[in-house]
Length: 147
Image (tube, rainbow, N blue to C red; front, side, top):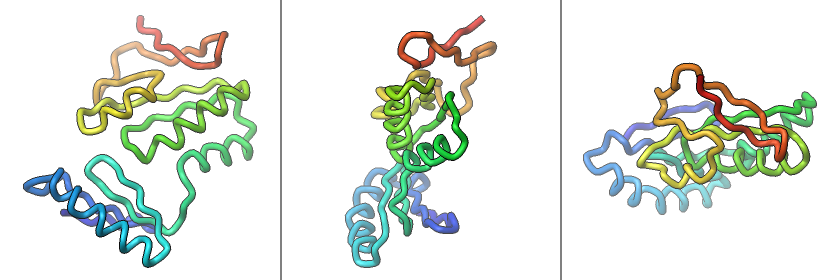
């Protein structure tokens, strides 16, 4: 297990454990108890459990950023369950007329993320030559153009 100091959060990583899934399953209930006792938020992720003092999600941050800047086009890249609130917010923003694009870095560890993707990249280092997001005119989503 590796602890990561994120400033206002603590990441508990299990990826390097002898049994990452077993360590994760054993730690999650205990970390939820600790979080509840201290008023913290638990954010389960891909081989990481994050404890943080705020219940503000990435979705809240995206919404605030759009409201602050007046952005009309928003793209988000993610690879972890903690990114789902941002992807959900992008769906809401799309319904409000913004052009949005959700890019997911595919991983067998987080296959649940795939359903949230407008663009599904083959892992964190994948970037096919010549790809670029191109806004669709009907529906405000995006597609990938490869040339």
